[in-house]
Amino acid sequence: MNTRDIKSMEIEELKELMADLGEKPFRAAQIYEWLHKRLAEDYEEMTNLSKSLRQKLKENYPIVSLKPLEIQTSKIDGTQKYLFCLPDGNVIESVLMKYEHGNSVCISSQAGCRMGCRFCASTIGGLTRSLLPSEMLDQVYSIQNLSKERVSNVVVMGTGEPLDNYENLLRFIQILTGEGGLHISQRNVTVSTCGLVPEIRKLAREKLQITLAISLHAPNDEKRRELMPIARKYQMEELLDACREYLQITHRRITFEYSLVKGVNDSPEDAKELAGQIKGMNCHVNLIPVNPIKERSFVKSAKEAVEKFKIKLEKYGINVTIRREMGSDIDGACGQLRKRFIEKERSENEGIFGY
Ligand code: SF4
Image 1 (cartoon, helix red, strand yellow):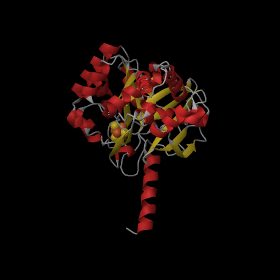
Image 2 (cartoon, protein in one colour):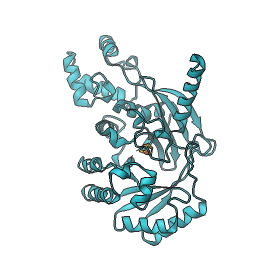
Image 3 (cartoon, helix red, strand yellow):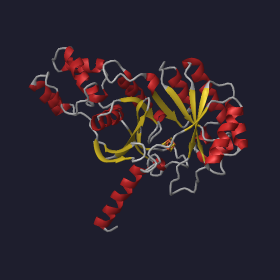
Image 4 (spheres, helix red, strand yellow):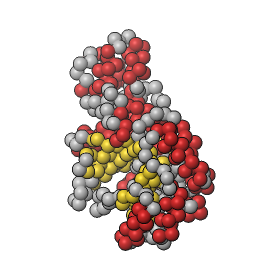
C-alpha cells in the first residue's frame, strides 16, 4: 500500500499516523469521519482540525479524489454512467443504477483487465493497473456527492477482475462496510469474479457476508474455454468445487452470471447441462442478454430464447432471473465508455503528432 494514501488507511493506521505527527489519537477518528462519512474531498473542509495539521496533511498525504470527465444519463431509467480520471491520468468508469429498493453503484476494480473474456470491451486494451482501495471507494463517494443520491448497494462488477486485486479489494470492503464510514451492509456488496479458484477459496475464509457472483457463461468446459481464457486454467469442476466450499463456509447464496450469446450457449440443451452442473447448490442464476461490442461478432440471444432458457432452468428447480437492461440508450456494455474515450484521445494525439 502507498503509505501516503490517507483514504486507503484503516482507522488503526490513521491513529499510528497521528502518533507519528505528534497529534492526539482522537484526531484519527475525526479525519476518518471527514473522509469516509462526510466524504470530504479537501482538507479545507475539515474545520475541526487545526490549520497547521491541515497544512501538514495537505503537503504530505494528498486525498485521492476522482475527477468526473463525463456523465451520461439514461432517458429511459435514469441510470448514470460516469467516466472518471484517476490522479495519474488513467480513466475508469462506474455506473449508478436506481432501483425501487435503493441506489446501486457498479464500480471498476482495475483500469483495464487481463482476463480476456471474449464478450467484454474492458479487456481489449489489456490491464493498465489495479486500483487502490481509495480509488475504488471514491467511485462510490464521488457518485454520492455528484448525484446527491444515497448509495445503498455496491457491486464490484465493472472493469477489472476484483480477485486479481485481492488485498486492495479486501481493504475497500472493510472501509466501505465499517462502522466509521458509509457503513453499507456487507450483504449489500457483491463481488463478481470470472473464476479465480485459489482466491475464491481464500475469500471464503475472510468471514465476509458479501455476495459472490461467478461469471460462468457456459454449461461445460469446452464452451467456456471459447468465451473465457480463464477456463483453460481452471476447469469447471474445480471452480464449482470452490463455490461449494465457499457456500459451506459462508452460508451465503452464490450467484452465477450467465451471458446469453446467440447460437453459442443459449440452447435448451445448454440450459439442461447447466442445471446438471449446479444442481443441489444454494445458488441463483442471473441471465444476461449479452451486449454486442463492435470488435466481436457475438450476437445477443433473442428474447424468446432467453425466456425458454429461463423456463428450462426453472423446470430443474434452479432459481433464475433475467437481468433488467439498465441504461440501454447510453454506452451500454461495461467498458465501452472508457474505451471510446481512450480511442478518441489516441486519435487526437495521432492528429497532433502526425503518426
Ligand atoms: S468480464 Fe470481467 S474479468 Fe472478464 S475481461 Fe471483462 S472485466 Fe475482465
